[in-house]
Image (cartoon, rainbow, N blue to C red; front, side, top):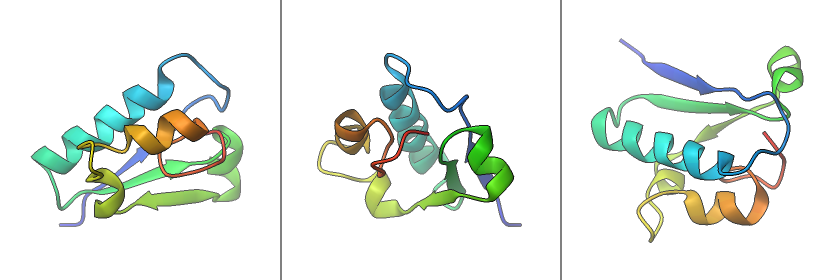
Length: 83
């Protein structure tokens, strides 16, 4: 059975949001590595327009153990666009 988990926020910037998303990615990768993780860009707008990205295993396994380093720099794990 294919498992998919989508991460969706309201689309604005929020303190610690990148860290929270990075920890979700890290934990899902540890507990359920077969689960596909999807993030929608720009919140509900991205959901309605189908503007999403898939978090690949390399994104979830950076040298810091999570994708937090990418997220802290850009506001969204693995993306330069706000989620």
